Length: 117
Ligand code: AMP
Image (cartoon, rainbow, N blue to C red):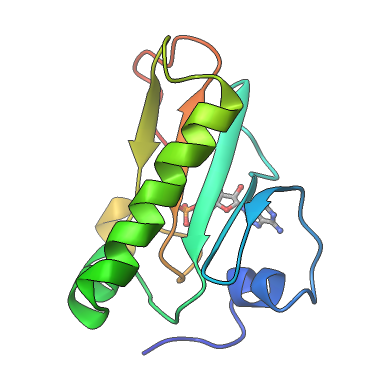
């Protein structure tokens, strides 16, 4: 069940500020408030979805594809394509998910090594 009061829903609604990297009507990419690497960006689709599986199974493939294509454009814009990066999506209790709105972490700007988020 999607919680309309989760912090990312409030960020999408503009009720809580964020440092935007890219936004359009469907997606938002912004800086993580507690970065674990030199570049640490969060990417979210604006549709209501709790986690990865909820997003994939709940929305049309065009919506899903658009989100990941936009993520790739952001990666290009960040200048981290050549050196590499890591994409993570935590899901549920075992995955360590804190915010119940599907999101990806884009980590880069340095060697990420064994760091996980
Ligand atoms: P997860 O554990 O995958 O749910 O990650 C949630 C992420 O959201 C964490 O890396 C937090 O640092 C980040 N976060 C929480 N609140 C905010 C906020 N207001 N602005 C930006 N990032 C946030």
